[in-house]
Image (cartoon, one colour):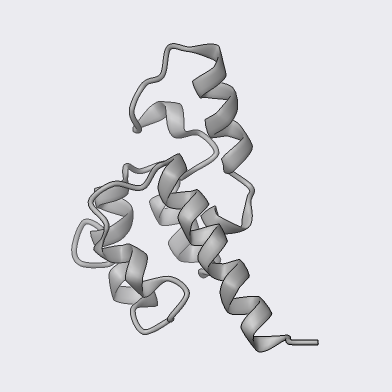
Length: 100
């Protein structure tokens, strides 16, 4: 979800919903390592365009095969719940790698 989600994502009216969404933006579940070029090209596009791009040049084309991203590219909706689930999955994955 982009920092400027208000431009192309579902509109929220409740202050608590807006606050919650803004809190999720810079959390681990919403972050992906992509090139500066791809990030600039997608900017604040909606989820469908971010996933597929305009000419098949979205996240699916450039990040498929990355196990921490690929499963989420199957989702029809990217929202606060999706971000929370990915953060939780990344946490579980990390602790399985870095066991004490």
